[in-house]
Length: 311
Image (cartoon, rainbow, N blue to C red; front, side, top):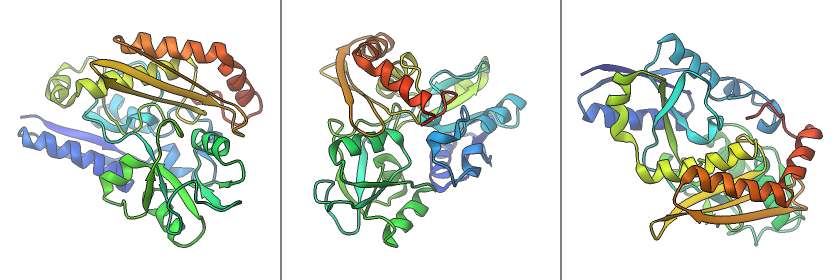
């Protein structure tokens, strides 16, 4: 069997993900090594992600290692990957998906509804912030950066009354003690691809593709392809105020999506169902743009709330 080199970020969650894939490959008889690669997004910790403005800020350096042949495959959080991959790469597998929803974490309160007026809620996601402000405009939304442990530590230290995180990362790390509420997608639509991993290889590397193909999950592939098609149609990246969640219901794909003003003053929602992931994503994205999403996104980019490079 081939010796495979995996490229991964160095955070606890990223390494959990890389080790998870590594274990599945070792079960097939492969020798596997993990190389930690520090990305731009890991180095910039004092600026909100939406303001960094670097395309593929959590993936660029890993793709460079792939291109150079230092690693054979990369394990990413799918939502970190730009909606259009750089030339020369392909997503060879999307393993079975974790819970894609966001969760409310707090030491003191049981739900978003129970938070007192002006409570401090931590998140650096413009998508989460916009939907939270639409629900509770009285809250004080504060920037929150760092890995999962850092964010939870800040919560426990009393810097925040609550924080919003992805369910998937907490589930994978077994750090669910402070999860008080799984937030419905009707209240807070998740990021496209949230909860899913992506295994990226060099385009045309048929040997590695053959070894990795067993990891691909058809349901995860269909749902995330649909969500990413919507994101691409709307010209958005992982830090724009766009949410998308596709699930298979009754044998068909059902997609819910949202685009919102950063201040929460306007939240546009749309849903649809179909059988073709790309077509469904593009059609729901087109409807949202026609309903006023184009104006919202133009305003967001125009005011410099986020960088238009963030695709």
